[in-house]
Length: 219
Image (cartoon, rainbow, N blue to C red; front, side):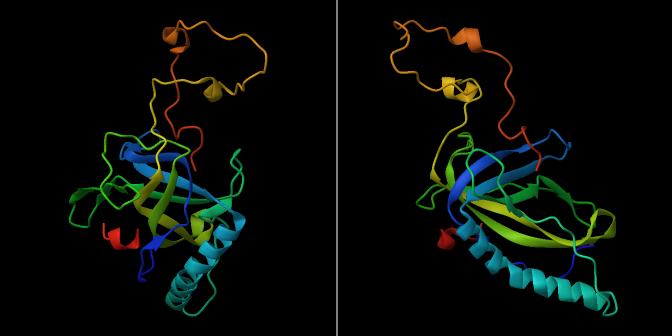
């Protein structure tokens, strides 16, 4: 059951987008779908961001303790800020948002992530933000206490993304780098013809490798 505490809008440091699903939700693991993104930053930036969100975590935890009659509540080990195990290095700030939520009266709400360019102007929904883009994310801390999954914890709810440097995702576009090849000095150089169809194999959608707008003035 989520605690009732004020949830501010917080902007992450600028970082590299990892497995972004921000134009459309990922429905691989649920029919409702989920937006998500990882923002890869340096350890120094990750530490500063954690200090920024910790007061809200502490306040929400104290509220949960009060609800528990003053008794300590077990804290979950999970965190939205983790060591990034990808080739980018550094640390990763993870945020997500359910694409559909149902209110108590049964009303279904379809949610979307706000997308903006570096100047704060709306980014076109049909231009898919790909991994490797430089971004900032606007997030709200969300608190929960579920003993079955570890106790009291926090996730970051994704509200919007500002694209500083776009790496557009094109599922039909394959490069040698996408297969892990690097250039070899003095080797064979193709004469000019292309063979796009040769590599046209089914490709995983960006973001499937791993599962886990009120802020224009902030950008």
